Image (cartoon, rainbow, N blue to C red; front, side, top):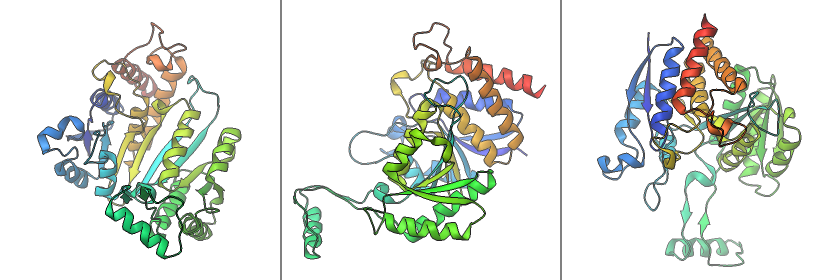
Length: 364
């Protein structure tokens, strides 16, 4: 049977990236029924200023799987982020960002193979904020001081950082389950519990409790600033990192830099009832329609989707074909050439063509 998948082209360069990925995924021999839905800045006029139509969320709830292109976050007030809206609307509490180096990609590091598991719904990204000078902010500052807290300056904007036992337990359990399913050797919980004792302290305490219940997988923990230093010194010592929302966002970009940049960084967001697969980079609207941008992160996100759908053989063949094209270095975009003005660089669709050709060779 064909897999039903919601396809969200996105905006900016999203449509050309998702089209290239759709062609490659179909070339694996896996059958799909695509339910194409819209989201992003470019469709706001059609949906009363809403860049995330409810019908798009409903489609994902029905298919339970979505492949999404990058989306432009509208500038200004109102909607914070389509990505955040998707995660909240579908309770996609676990973000997975594999960071794996492939021969042929320019980078200062070799043989990196890390997985970032980021809690998606809590922490400072929960969006509980109070603007400086507003009555709510003033009232909150007064309450803080009435409880013995001291602010050096009262003219402050305030963000609140909720980290719950429930949210922490389910993301750490997810990290251990992911490690076990994928043959990973260790989970490392990342925190700042030495300073934030009641939020990150809770995170660390619950992570250690979950680790005791999953003793078949190795566990350790690291303070986030020390973790960043160790990643650039000894990345081979780490495997699966599980982090609260903000640290996960920052550290995943650090790890992407170790493997050649966001153009090589796929992503997936998981909840109990749905999964959305997307690259971690932005929509690059200035390159829209130019058939120029690197599709590797989108393609690798498609590979992660194949794994999720149980199509492990097709996923392995696709990753192998991508790796072959990268290592040969001929049919790659400008950013993956020795110099960015290399005249032999190809476009987005030509990269897809080369991978499809490799897939045919590998299957034969």
